[in-house]
Image (tube, rainbow, N blue to C red):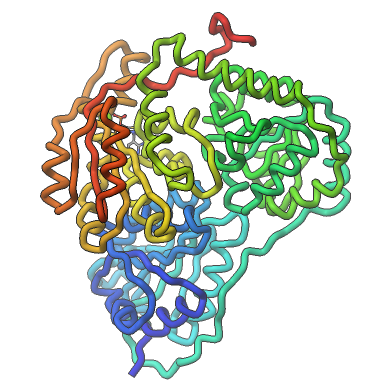
Length: 542
Ligand SMILES: Cc1ncc(C[n+]2csc(CCOP(=O)(O)OP(=O)(O)O)c2C)c(N)n1
Ligand SMILES: [Mg+2]
């Protein structure tokens, strides 16, 4: 006899899901019973936080909704920071959470795991909340959840299914649901024409690409529009991958460097697409735009950080509409020369300031990994460098938790990404501090044979915070950490590991790629924070 849990797994299968992420609890065992006879591949984690990060990484690397199965109360709350990161990074995670019995919710009758209002904890974070109060309601609720998660701008959703619904016998058989596609909204023609006129009239247009370009699959349209307008393309930290560095119009994502700021402020029209133009990318919103056109799928984001002519729509569909409206320009050597000069100026700055090690580490990683590798950087010093300065290859290959700046994300996200794109290398870089949110997942990687690779850069503490403390207060406190031997720790989990050094890093990454299954590298190193070219840097062309 089928139970509610079977209806969930059948509906997920019919919606096209292949993998589910999670961690079980008493209230959700009905769903685990469904998994036992399902074709869904269950990927288990040792904390709900890691399961949520993994679902996020899977969703970001594949663009597919990632079902996340989590139990009531404490388990649900432990996943919250992962859902927050998914929300600010717009990853379509479909959270399916159990609950105490349906008729007891909110009554305070003392059930284990009971929260006064579980959904209320998620309401300010997720895009959409749903609940199934009977087995009959499950398929439609899940179909709506998938559609809501995917609808641009994509993001996590929360579905609540009480324990009694998951466990009760049911005669519901056919789910009646099927795979859902993201809707692609386009702005009204009048608006598009107005934007195209502004772009055509611009003598120094610039395109600013955010994470929405990659998520929407708009890289081809972006590139074509940049070529049509002969517009340099800059990227926000989360937009990396929107255009490849190989392209002569690709500037980079070093938003804090003065040449980037100058390019954008000297532009007569900036076309921003799929970016919130947030504080980190705009020097705390101090950048001044001559004229801004903003494409965003969320109407409330238009003008939220800067006044703009708003084009409410999906990035891919809207760029395609603009492309047929603008006049094609001839290839402009001057623009390409300007882009090349800006790139050279930023890399020369690192040399001039004596930052030899950090760019070298990034170049070593770039050289050792295939260009289609998934790169996952944590909130660690080298991650900050990478956000500005690591190569940009293609969409869905740059995973960085700057949606919310969530420390501890990278390893679990890299595991999720590896599950989603098994043929690509998935490589995570974490600091020693962040890694201790995550190293228990070496066990998950080993048990389930998920062949992601992890580099831990060990500076014996919270280096980023050391740097900020020193700069702001002239001293440090509470940021030095006594750490385990990461190599021995990995080996205790059955994961092959090597201690490496900046000079051996390339060779050791290659070794890690040859290891069958997960592998860990640990590298003692003290790194300097990324130092952008500021307005008053001598020698800047500002
Ligand atoms: C969940 C969470 N907690 C705390 C922080 C604050 N934080 C940002 S960077 C950092 C230190 C990271 O240390 P480590 O991982 O060793 O990298 P390092 O800075 O040393 O390179 C901390 C604690 C955060 N961003 N997210
Ligand atoms: Mg550290």
